[in-house]
Image (tube, rainbow, N blue to C red; front, side):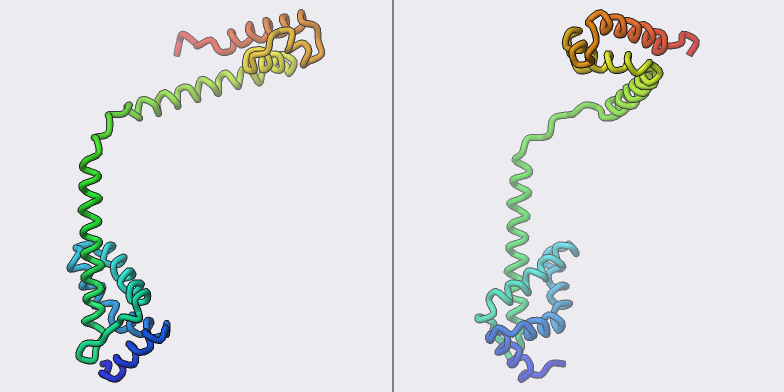
Length: 187
């Protein structure tokens, strides 16, 4: 149990900017302050935050720390009461602000989007598998003309081949892909 002289020394230490005095006060009274904050807020997490804020405020206002009847505890309870009052007030303001917001619009059913994405991924994998089976030259022409949007002339320049070669390679690639990606009617 702390003596009156010990508490007065802690208060004097705090006023003299001694962080060890704050640490001692914290070790001595944090549980009591925490329980007080819980009773004021009704929430363990908020009480934890409030307790931390109490001791932060004690340090910030250490020059004003007072001992009543030889104890700093009444002053700590006063700080804790103010901190909890401010938290409660902030919570009410937050709730009013949230209540004033319009209700969120109903969004699309995400399950349908997931199913669509899985199906499109499966289709894309089938297409890519078929493209991998094409000769490399046909893959190159397909990538430049179909996917990159180059004209036949631009693709011919990029590959350093005649325009007719680009056309014939693309025609063969499309024919092979049509056969390879055609869905089996028996499925």
